[in-house]
Length: 126
Picture (cartoon, one colour):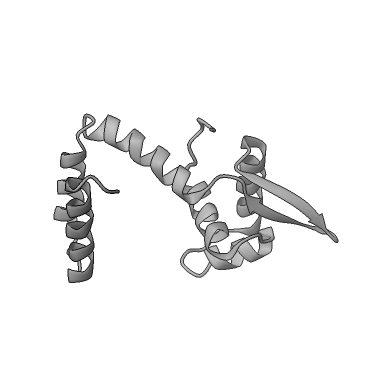
């Protein structure tokens, strides 16, 4: 398991790759530019760094490279959550959950899913 953690910019790129699958720098840059202005060369440089870190693989396709995430969304989320839990919440999952639930209005569906999950935990399932 990789110990390096993706930066905020790297996570934005990973989100696109996790949602859409393998893509070129141009395709990634187009998606990123839908929400903020990011230059092509900036996206290219970040993706080259990510390739060097082992977060991405690439295959030549004509004159361009097609990039693919080599780290999973779930594994990355777990790694980031573990770090956040330890550093910001002193290892207390309860404090993390209470803060998360207190910061945003949860939908009834989300609350129902949380209740169901807690019921399964109490029943020994997961």
